[in-house]
Length: 265
Ligand code: NAP
Ligand code: GCO
Image (cartoon, rainbow, N blue to C red; front, side, top):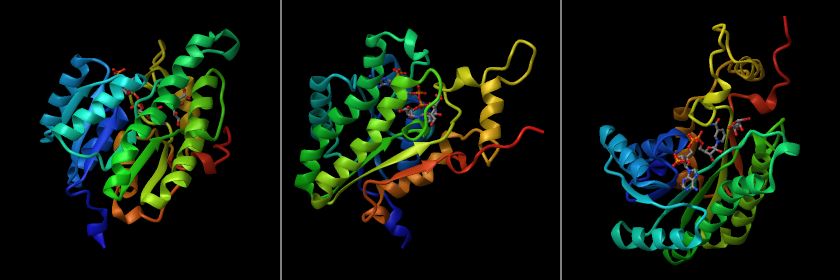
């Protein structure tokens, strides 16, 4: 049974994986036997990423590519297929957030978040699906969010994108399941990465950031998640063990979505 969780012989593209959640997922995939391919926007970040993977004993293939640029993405996939091989597993991880009250957000700012967090997963998935169909299998994993289910102040564009990404996940599952392609989502809770660093900053008086305390109270596990908490769920959804799981969003949130929150003392 355990061999069904192996990724031996598989090629995995994780977008935006120089660090953060993408890096942790790529590390886990390498440990499960996959060949790692990742991209970032700048050569500087790709180089840093390659060094970081090397430090973990992983010989990752890094490419410069802005996932919102369809021509660049098609060129990336072509190059990967020529230099590494056909992509078996795609993780649409690259993402941004802008925390701005909606009535103060410009349409350009809103569009930028939608472009990276929703349009790009469409573009990259569209680029890899034809070869997955030819190969007779494929795994697409979209990194969704608590904001695929919940809203909060200042994250309107991000929530709209991540809500759309949940439905794109279900639609890819519906449209390509007959080709043995499974498309699922991972919905991380609040994870300690550069993206959430502003929400965890220690205050001038040495106290915890109010949002930090809020998340601790909203999480049954009473802690922020670590990128490594996503490793097991990500391996499961990339492996043969999940071949009959399709269109599902697996929330890895320490129980946030199940919990009304700790009552104040
Ligand atoms: P992060 O630390 O900000 O890393 C995001 C990565 O995406 C960076 O490597 C970034 O590259 C890359 N990226 C951004 N725009 C890109 C583009 N146009 N083309 C290529 N790469 C691009 O974020 P994270 O916390 O690891 O989050 C990763 C994913 O998980 C995101 O989709 C995020 O929405 C999602 N998520 C995060 C949390 C959390 O609590 N952290 C929870 C739920 C979901 P650069 O460094 O070059 O900008
Ligand atoms: C925020 C956070 C969240 C997390 C994550 C939660 O400002 O609320 O950045 O959006 O990044 O998406 O699942």
